[in-house]
Image 1 (cartoon, rainbow, N blue to C red):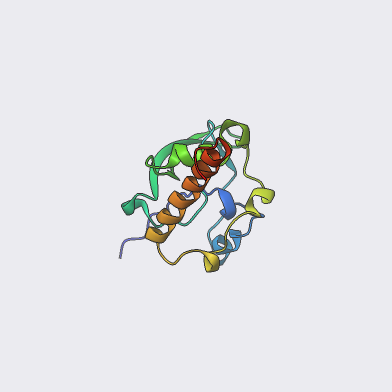
Image 2 (cartoon, helix red, strand yellow; image 1 turned 90 degrees about the vertical axis):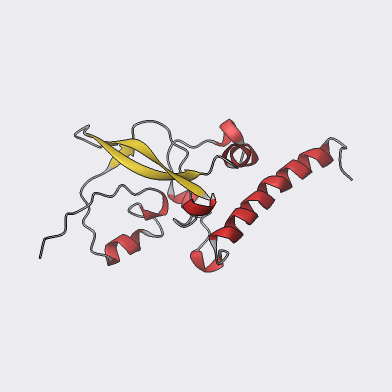
Amino acid sequence: MAEATPTMVFVYGTLKRGFPNHSLLVASATPFVGAASTAGPASLIIGPYSGTHIGVYERRPITVVVDGSGEVVQAEAYFAHPSYAEALWRRCGGEEAEIGEYTVDHAGEYVPKSERLADAAGLIDAIHRFVATATDNRRRAHGLLP
């Protein structure tokens, strides 16, 4: 029987050491190889991995740099789908709300899986409602809606 080839995984968000979901990596006996950072700013998604097939997320290549050695490694990350990414970015504050590094404080805003909608289709509907709410509030503020 052929031996399995190990796969290097770059994690971010709540899977990072010291964050709420890191225990999932620990429980899987996944060894820690080293720290790395994205080579440039990246608007990474906070959420479940499901949904790439129905337009919730898309996987795109990113470049990460291993801390200390400077080694450049190619990885994949989950990004908001283009159908709503810009509207969501604006709804969440746009450029003024961008963060340099995802911190434990940001992780405090993470919605536990037990409190999320049961399927990815429900998630995309919730995203569109969230974005539309901001649009309606702006229209009301300008007297365009009752």
